[in-house]
Length: 180
Image (tube, rainbow, N blue to C red; front, side, top):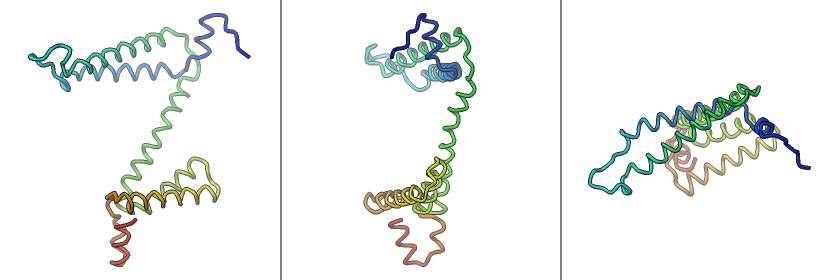
């Protein structure tokens, strides 16, 4: 059943996101910064036609991006406030947790090695995401092991060996460095 909306204001209030003002402000600031860097990052060549300039399309795209970001910001600035702006922003910021997880993984791989680190993080992230049954944790561990075997053995991706491998006997250390 279709919901009838009588006025444009009702339509706007129904579909407007409360955190859009923060997003629009951030995007506008980023756009202005990128436009300010055009002179440092691109060049206009004197012996080249206007349509063949290396700086033409970056300039056009960044000016359009800044213009649309400004229009988005103005439209949100003049709109009525809807409660929940900071709750939505907090929801967005929660995604940065996974950047921290990834950076921890990057720093731990050279210490523990590729296989133990991948197993640890796959199982930990699975648990963190709420899949706490033994079945799901086992699937995460098996998936991590398969990924390591494929990357190290078949694709021969060179990942530095862990410092922990130095404590293993020579034959096992060589095997772990080559395949895990």
